[in-house]
Length: 381
Image (cartoon, rainbow, N blue to C red; front, top):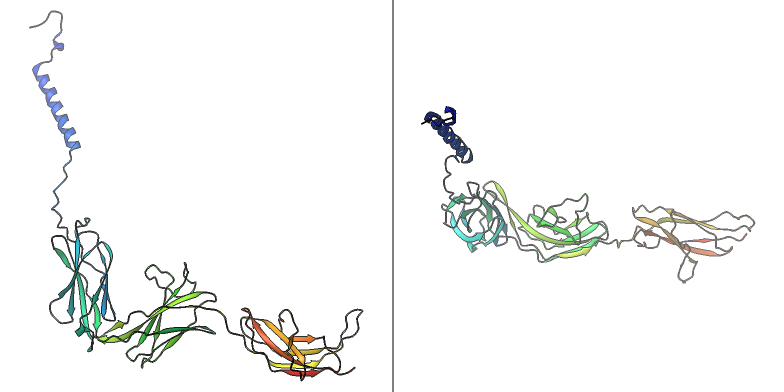
């Protein structure tokens, strides 16, 4: 029914209402789709398998084997590990069949270390190869597989170093130890006590957070009878701590392998210059010419000369004099060191005979033995 005075456009026809409702529904569908995008295909659940170890290494030390590896923090599908991880270590003699489990221990992500004791039958010759592997198992005892193999040599270990002694020598620290026939090398580890930065120019190796550790590999010769070495890289006033290990080098299956002893007890030494310079040679004494300063009387002298000492740390010379034939102690003539190999003694009297010696002094204050003595008389005018 039409209302008087109202136009037909005020009441929309049924078709228009249906069109508006359809548009609104389409708009809602678009908005919902934009806010709830499809996540794609669902991922399968993680098996929580630890990634296999790929950096296992082994070292034979006396009657033990030291194993080192890195335990991964993530699973094979890249997710963080959940729950405890157990490291299962197995041992296999080369060509010996199945890898036998010898140790299990809970491990955490990061650097991991394990020390195993060798059974007695592997501590004696003949030398042969023994391989180790690590399997990481999750809390359900599942594993993604073994690690890389790491080999050591089974056989007799050399005798440990009973004593290492250190003695200061002119050109370094002399280290000595008892010889051992089975040894073909000695590994010396040196740590500078109190050092926080590496020594410039010296070979260094980072060891357990000690950047000052220096490792010297010392060949012992074919008969294994070298019993010492001279460390020439030390610096004056610095203190060093040394330990040493014997190393038996063996050939197994075409490979060179090591059997080490445990480190020796540490010895400590401070390198100091306690060595005197060379003794002056060729001392000569002759009567000098008459000399006079302005306004003073002429003064006779006895002139001394000698061959120069060539020590790199030479600081100068001292001259000593006594009366010829006297048993009195010689008197030092110069209060300060003489730089060159010559001296003129003006405190002499005509008709007197004098006995002279010369010594050399280094920068550390060490004084050489006295030179051969010479005697010289000052003639009467």
